[in-house]
Image 1: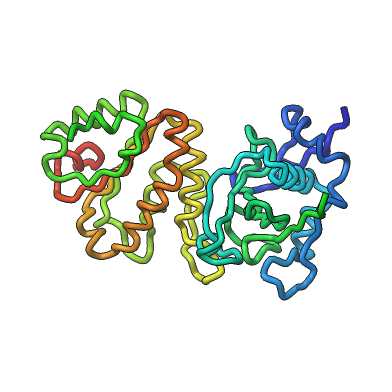
Image 2: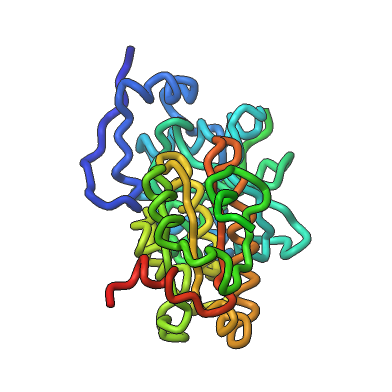
Length: 153
Length: 157
């Protein structure tokens, strides 16, 4: 079985880079194949509030975190990943306001999710909002979310 | 109403308690809850420096919640603190046997920050089903009238 590279550990609870894909998570990661490229796209307009900045891309592309995010989105779309809660766009500061209901998901293996990482998705939509810092802005993610769009399958 | 309900995992999870709620047996009640492994957290709204420290942060500090402290909302593009707070309570439900939140001086809370009190209730109710699914008690108790015996269980004289 091919092992994914292990990132340096961090003591921060809210640090997605603390994610360590151990043997227990390998099965989950396997389904994403060797690369998530080709599964989703980013917003390319820098004026879009959910633009993936070069800083955020640099810390995300090609990492186990990217694989985990892609895997999670695919499982959500397949209806096999359990929702955590439902909140409105207004509450989450996401498009659609109070009339749009988003399902919130953890990221990664459900029994060992990546601390602090969350994904919001309107059921049936292929647009996902990834929050790596638990709804907070962070390095390269000024509005707390990065928009990711799954390609049709 | 008996405090015994606080030991149950039930949808009757919001309580407005008056002076006689514990019938003078707060010590027994809180001791009983704690001995059952239920986390009991007390916060007095009068002690919150309004505008500086959010009630969600005072509760989160007592519970050592995972992503606290929550940043105040300084921009309309940021989420209100209730969102990460309720999310952390969901995480807490995975490893605690139960949770009772006592909010003292609730009549002041209601008078001074009605919206905040209702948002606390809403946030609590959004997450409470996670506890119920695990058959763990989770209650939010507003002390509407002074009850020194409750306060004495949590605050050193």
